[in-house]
Amino acid sequence: MNPIKRELLDLHRINHIDAEIFIDRFINKYWGKNSSARIITGNSMAMKEIVISKLNFYNIKFTIGNEWESTSKSFIDFLIE
Image (cartoon, rainbow, N blue to C red; front, side, top):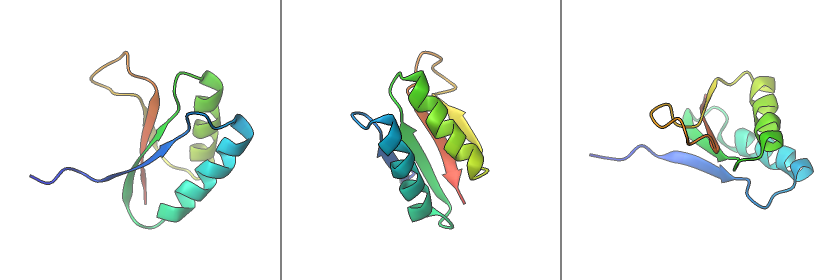
């Protein structure tokens, strides 16, 4: 069985201002490629809000954390179409 390939952006150690640029570049790199993606935000609520704001700007649906493990909320998954 082939594992699902997921594009990954890890925002650990990235400041909030630079995060917006990294997120834009990440989304634009995979735009139109129907890619499964994950952005690791860590536990920062401010970082999650930045990511969510960008995903909403691009009209991308997303899920926060793992729906099967309610304690894991340090990442956001989505599909870049």
